[in-house]
Image (cartoon, rainbow, N blue to C red; front, side, top):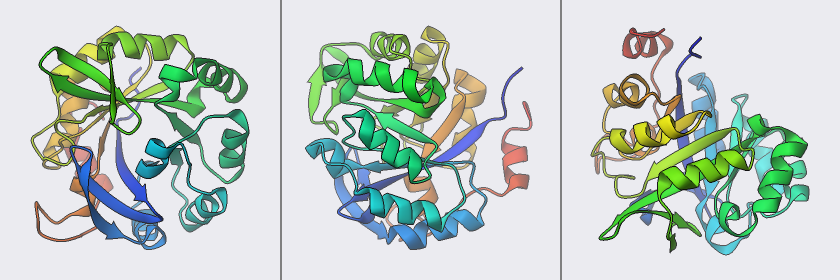
Length: 256
Protein backbone atom coordinates (compact mmCIF):
# COMPACT_ATOMS: atom_id res chain seq x y z
CA UNK A 1 0.00 0.00 0.00
CA UNK A 2 1.38 3.38 -0.96
CA UNK A 3 2.14 5.67 1.95
CA UNK A 4 0.69 9.16 1.94
CA UNK A 5 2.83 11.57 -0.09
CA UNK A 6 5.02 13.94 1.88
CA UNK A 7 5.99 17.52 1.04
CA UNK A 8 9.12 18.66 2.85
CA UNK A 9 10.71 22.10 3.23
CA UNK A 10 14.52 21.95 3.09
CA UNK A 11 16.03 24.82 5.07
CA UNK A 12 19.70 25.73 4.79
CA UNK A 13 21.66 26.89 7.83
CA UNK A 14 24.77 29.03 7.54
CA UNK A 15 26.38 30.64 10.58
CA UNK A 16 23.17 30.35 12.60
CA UNK A 17 20.93 31.91 9.94
CA UNK A 18 18.60 30.43 7.33
CA UNK A 19 19.77 31.13 3.78
CA UNK A 20 18.79 29.97 0.29
CA UNK A 21 21.29 29.10 -2.41
CA UNK A 22 21.14 28.68 -6.19
CA UNK A 23 23.13 25.75 -7.60
CA UNK A 24 24.67 25.48 -4.10
CA UNK A 25 26.12 29.04 -4.43
CA UNK A 26 25.24 32.67 -3.65
CA UNK A 27 23.41 32.30 -0.31
CA UNK A 28 20.59 34.80 0.25
CA UNK A 29 19.41 35.56 3.80
CA UNK A 30 15.96 34.11 4.56
CA UNK A 31 15.50 34.66 8.27
CA UNK A 32 16.16 33.76 11.87
CA UNK A 33 15.73 30.00 12.35
CA UNK A 34 13.49 30.29 15.42
CA UNK A 35 11.12 32.70 13.64
CA UNK A 36 10.99 30.66 10.43
CA UNK A 37 10.44 27.37 12.27
CA UNK A 38 7.69 28.95 14.36
CA UNK A 39 5.83 29.96 11.17
CA UNK A 40 6.21 26.51 9.63
CA UNK A 41 4.96 25.03 12.88
CA UNK A 42 1.69 26.93 12.44
CA UNK A 43 1.33 25.46 8.93
CA UNK A 44 1.35 21.86 10.23
CA UNK A 45 4.18 20.87 7.90
CA UNK A 46 4.78 17.12 7.35
CA UNK A 47 8.46 17.30 8.30
CA UNK A 48 11.42 19.65 7.85
CA UNK A 49 15.01 19.00 6.80
CA UNK A 50 17.69 21.33 8.20
CA UNK A 51 21.03 21.25 6.39
CA UNK A 52 24.03 23.18 7.71
CA UNK A 53 25.84 23.99 4.47
CA UNK A 54 28.95 25.35 6.16
CA UNK A 55 28.94 22.39 8.55
CA UNK A 56 28.81 20.03 5.58
CA UNK A 57 31.77 21.75 3.95
CA UNK A 58 33.90 22.15 7.10
CA UNK A 59 32.88 18.94 8.91
CA UNK A 60 31.65 21.11 11.76
CA UNK A 61 27.99 20.45 12.66
CA UNK A 62 25.61 23.00 14.15
CA UNK A 63 26.12 23.03 17.96
CA UNK A 64 23.66 20.70 19.68
CA UNK A 65 22.37 23.40 22.04
CA UNK A 66 21.24 25.41 19.00
CA UNK A 67 19.66 22.36 17.41
CA UNK A 68 17.79 21.72 20.64
CA UNK A 69 16.40 25.28 20.62
CA UNK A 70 15.14 24.74 17.07
CA UNK A 71 13.47 21.48 18.10
CA UNK A 72 11.81 23.19 21.06
CA UNK A 73 10.40 25.86 18.74
CA UNK A 74 8.39 23.50 16.59
CA UNK A 75 6.56 20.22 16.94
CA UNK A 76 7.22 19.11 13.38
CA UNK A 77 9.41 16.03 12.81
CA UNK A 78 12.91 17.40 12.19
CA UNK A 79 15.85 15.99 10.26
CA UNK A 80 19.38 17.43 10.57
CA UNK A 81 22.38 17.09 8.29
CA UNK A 82 25.76 18.77 7.93
CA UNK A 83 29.20 17.59 9.00
CA UNK A 84 28.19 14.48 10.93
CA UNK A 85 31.03 12.02 11.39
CA UNK A 86 30.44 9.89 14.48
CA UNK A 87 27.77 8.02 16.38
CA UNK A 88 28.09 10.17 19.52
CA UNK A 89 27.02 13.23 17.52
CA UNK A 90 23.98 11.34 16.29
CA UNK A 91 23.01 10.30 19.83
CA UNK A 92 23.13 13.93 20.93
CA UNK A 93 21.00 15.05 17.97
CA UNK A 94 18.37 12.37 18.56
CA UNK A 95 18.34 13.27 22.26
CA UNK A 96 17.79 16.91 21.26
CA UNK A 97 14.50 15.91 19.64
CA UNK A 98 15.35 15.09 16.03
CA UNK A 99 13.80 12.10 14.25
CA UNK A 100 16.37 11.63 11.48
CA UNK A 101 19.88 12.61 10.47
CA UNK A 102 21.36 13.13 7.02
CA UNK A 103 24.70 11.72 5.87
CA UNK A 104 26.39 12.76 2.65
CA UNK A 105 30.19 12.90 2.53
CA UNK A 106 30.37 10.01 5.02
CA UNK A 107 28.95 7.75 2.29
CA UNK A 108 32.29 8.23 0.55
CA UNK A 109 34.91 8.29 3.29
CA UNK A 110 33.27 6.88 6.41
CA UNK A 111 31.04 4.02 5.33
CA UNK A 112 31.55 2.08 8.54
CA UNK A 113 30.02 5.00 10.44
CA UNK A 114 26.95 4.97 8.17
CA UNK A 115 26.57 1.21 8.51
CA UNK A 116 26.96 1.34 12.31
CA UNK A 117 24.52 4.26 12.60
CA UNK A 118 21.90 2.43 10.54
CA UNK A 119 22.19 -0.62 12.78
CA UNK A 120 22.33 1.28 16.07
CA UNK A 121 19.53 3.80 15.45
CA UNK A 122 17.53 1.96 12.79
CA UNK A 123 17.40 2.54 9.05
CA UNK A 124 14.38 4.83 9.39
CA UNK A 125 16.55 7.38 11.23
CA UNK A 126 19.33 7.65 8.62
CA UNK A 127 18.86 9.58 5.36
CA UNK A 128 21.47 9.49 2.59
CA UNK A 129 21.80 12.82 0.83
CA UNK A 130 22.92 12.41 -2.79
CA UNK A 131 23.84 15.59 -4.66
CA UNK A 132 23.97 15.20 -8.44
CA UNK A 133 25.81 17.48 -10.87
CA UNK A 134 25.72 17.14 -14.65
CA UNK A 135 29.20 17.25 -16.21
CA UNK A 136 30.60 16.79 -19.72
CA UNK A 137 31.34 13.20 -18.71
CA UNK A 138 27.75 12.61 -17.52
CA UNK A 139 26.07 12.79 -14.13
CA UNK A 140 28.35 12.72 -11.12
CA UNK A 141 27.78 12.64 -7.38
CA UNK A 142 29.12 15.58 -5.37
CA UNK A 143 30.29 15.48 -1.75
CA UNK A 144 31.70 18.07 0.70
CA UNK A 145 28.75 20.41 0.18
CA UNK A 146 28.96 20.05 -3.59
CA UNK A 147 32.67 20.91 -3.70
CA UNK A 148 34.12 17.52 -4.70
CA UNK A 149 32.93 15.29 -7.54
CA UNK A 150 33.33 11.55 -7.34
CA UNK A 151 33.42 9.18 -10.27
CA UNK A 152 30.16 7.39 -9.61
CA UNK A 153 26.69 7.53 -11.11
CA UNK A 154 23.73 8.54 -8.93
CA UNK A 155 22.13 5.11 -9.38
CA UNK A 156 25.25 3.22 -8.24
CA UNK A 157 25.70 5.63 -5.33
CA UNK A 158 22.08 5.15 -4.27
CA UNK A 159 22.48 1.37 -4.35
CA UNK A 160 25.63 1.66 -2.25
CA UNK A 161 23.80 3.84 0.28
CA UNK A 162 20.95 1.35 0.47
CA UNK A 163 23.43 -1.49 1.01
CA UNK A 164 24.89 0.43 3.98
CA UNK A 165 21.45 0.35 5.60
CA UNK A 166 20.12 3.89 5.17
CA UNK A 167 16.33 4.12 5.13
CA UNK A 168 15.77 6.96 2.71
CA UNK A 169 17.49 9.03 0.01
CA UNK A 170 17.35 12.81 -0.34
CA UNK A 171 18.16 13.24 -4.04
CA UNK A 172 19.19 16.77 -5.03
CA UNK A 173 19.71 18.01 -8.57
CA UNK A 174 22.37 20.67 -7.97
CA UNK A 175 21.89 22.08 -11.48
CA UNK A 176 18.25 22.83 -10.68
CA UNK A 177 18.55 23.79 -6.99
CA UNK A 178 17.15 27.28 -6.47
CA UNK A 179 16.43 27.76 -10.20
CA UNK A 180 12.66 27.01 -10.33
CA UNK A 181 13.24 25.00 -13.53
CA UNK A 182 11.22 22.03 -12.33
CA UNK A 183 12.37 18.74 -10.82
CA UNK A 184 14.64 16.33 -12.69
CA UNK A 185 11.95 13.68 -12.96
CA UNK A 186 14.00 11.40 -15.18
CA UNK A 187 16.83 11.27 -12.62
CA UNK A 188 14.34 10.77 -9.79
CA UNK A 189 12.65 7.86 -11.55
CA UNK A 190 15.96 6.20 -12.40
CA UNK A 191 17.16 6.32 -8.80
CA UNK A 192 13.81 5.31 -7.29
CA UNK A 193 13.53 2.36 -9.70
CA UNK A 194 17.01 1.18 -8.65
CA UNK A 195 16.42 1.00 -4.88
CA UNK A 196 13.77 -0.39 -2.54
CA UNK A 197 13.92 2.56 -0.12
CA UNK A 198 12.00 5.85 -0.42
CA UNK A 199 13.47 8.68 -2.50
CA UNK A 200 12.81 12.35 -1.73
CA UNK A 201 13.13 14.52 -4.86
CA UNK A 202 14.75 17.92 -4.31
CA UNK A 203 15.88 20.77 -6.53
CA UNK A 204 13.97 22.93 -8.98
CA UNK A 205 10.38 23.12 -7.74
CA UNK A 206 8.80 26.13 -9.45
CA UNK A 207 5.19 25.92 -8.29
CA UNK A 208 2.92 23.99 -5.98
CA UNK A 209 1.77 21.92 -8.95
CA UNK A 210 5.40 20.82 -9.38
CA UNK A 211 5.30 19.20 -5.93
CA UNK A 212 3.06 16.39 -7.17
CA UNK A 213 5.18 15.48 -10.18
CA UNK A 214 8.03 13.48 -8.57
CA UNK A 215 5.46 11.42 -6.67
CA UNK A 216 2.88 10.94 -9.43
CA UNK A 217 5.23 10.79 -12.44
CA UNK A 218 8.53 9.43 -11.07
CA UNK A 219 7.43 7.17 -8.21
CA UNK A 220 9.19 9.16 -5.49
CA UNK A 221 7.94 8.94 -1.92
CA UNK A 222 8.24 12.67 -1.21
CA UNK A 223 8.91 16.07 -2.76
CA UNK A 224 11.22 18.58 -1.09
CA UNK A 225 11.75 22.25 -1.87
CA UNK A 226 13.49 25.32 -0.53
CA UNK A 227 12.82 28.48 -2.54
CA UNK A 228 9.18 27.59 -3.14
CA UNK A 229 8.48 27.66 0.61
CA UNK A 230 10.51 30.73 1.56
CA UNK A 231 10.09 33.25 -1.29
CA UNK A 232 7.04 34.98 -2.81
CA UNK A 233 8.42 34.40 -6.30
CA UNK A 234 11.80 34.68 -7.99
CA UNK A 235 13.53 37.77 -6.61
CA UNK A 236 10.44 39.04 -4.78
CA UNK A 237 11.32 38.78 -1.12
CA UNK A 238 10.79 36.31 1.68
CA UNK A 239 7.36 34.80 2.33
CA UNK A 240 7.24 31.61 4.40
CA UNK A 241 4.45 29.45 2.99
CA UNK A 242 3.20 25.87 2.71
CA UNK A 243 0.15 24.20 1.12
CA UNK A 244 -2.92 23.74 3.31
CA UNK A 245 -4.32 20.25 3.86
CA UNK A 246 -7.05 21.04 1.33
CA UNK A 247 -4.51 22.21 -1.25
CA UNK A 248 -2.46 19.09 -0.59
CA UNK A 249 -5.47 16.87 -1.21
CA UNK A 250 -6.08 18.65 -4.51
CA UNK A 251 -2.44 18.27 -5.54
CA UNK A 252 -2.43 14.55 -4.84
CA UNK A 253 -6.05 13.75 -5.65
CA UNK A 254 -4.91 10.82 -7.81
CA UNK A 255 -3.43 8.93 -4.88
CA UNK A 256 -4.75 10.33 -1.60
